[in-house]
Image (tube, rainbow over all chains, first blue to last red; front, top):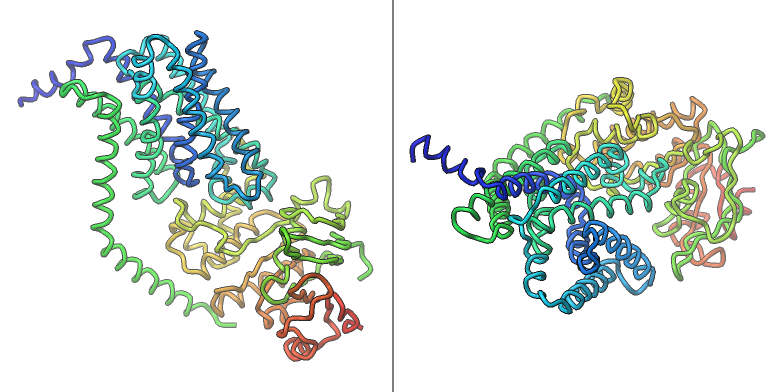
Length: 300
Length: 252
């Protein structure tokens, strides 16, 4: 392929207005989910992320049936489910993950039951479950951008609390950080991030946008800012590459995006695994240096 | 001690489900003193520290703070956890981790100021870890991790420091350094309270010892390792001893 050919290949989808919207939407989604997903992965909340993605489903369906905003519907559902999990896990015999399992499966079933009552059942269900990135309109795009700005803005403003809660909850509590309040705030931001991704990758694959780029970044990043940047970058690049794949090879866009992100994860994972022997050797020599340093400290 | 105590614990009892961790413990903590809680595993040493810190709510009894600690007394009390309470694989440098201790001194609206970084570096200096400021926390040895946890506590001025097993898994130089830090905190008029298994360090650094026993409250037999005889052997001078429970007369 000549250089002109590559340019042409890359530029062609951009001539279509719906593809422009799709590209912009996936850039925003990749960015937001990459950043929020970093905290999800560091806090070991992958299951909570999955549960939330499914649990907001009835809220979206109800909002859709009532003809109101699916974003509001999802938010209300997220708050209800988060409170429900909190109440159920008060029982000494139930672990929190059990309570989450009960809530999200039930909520998901409720969503499917509700949508099955509509005449356009299968089309609507497919679009919610698998996303419909080519149907992103100008208003959807503006709303997604607005929500993204709110989520990222909140994370910037509350960065100290979010970082403290992620790294050391005991320290956070002793420094006067209200754990429950910031946990709820984080769950709301998580719900918002999920909602931004619903139309682009769909309900089933939202989790991949939250977890996979962040998990990839976790394998290589040694600092939080680096992990955030890398996770967002991988999310955005997987989104753009997936859209090209979907355009030229006629694959479902959500699946293509997630497959690219998963592919990147496995490539990075393999490289990291292959480097292990070298890393172990470097660790050992660093430990030897540290031991020598300790030994050279003045003895009491 | 004649000065008003910074913190006064009266008849504190704590239970986790059916297991009684603390049964009717009373204690006063004063400025400028070092107190060690000793006793076998499960005797409630950590629980007592966490009760003072406010992480554990007592089922019975009261914790009273001196007005000298200001309107938010618990913020004058720093709890220093065992290093294994932290996930050392998280993506942070030593400096990042220490800076987390300065949460209250940093602003939500402004980027991190030079003073905060300087304070963190000074705290690292005290524990001899300044040259590791940029090291990834996962690359530290156990002793170095414990030093960093201590530095994170020292970054912030407070009236009372609660150290949970500070000597566990540290080497001799680190142990000596911690004793030095504890002594200098005491000299500055701070109250240092520690829970420890290390009888030598407890004896060397503390002004008072509180011996806690395993068991369901005061009626349980003393653990074998803490009979009056072994305590006397372990700690030498039993006049400084304070035995919680039935054997309180030993103090006399």
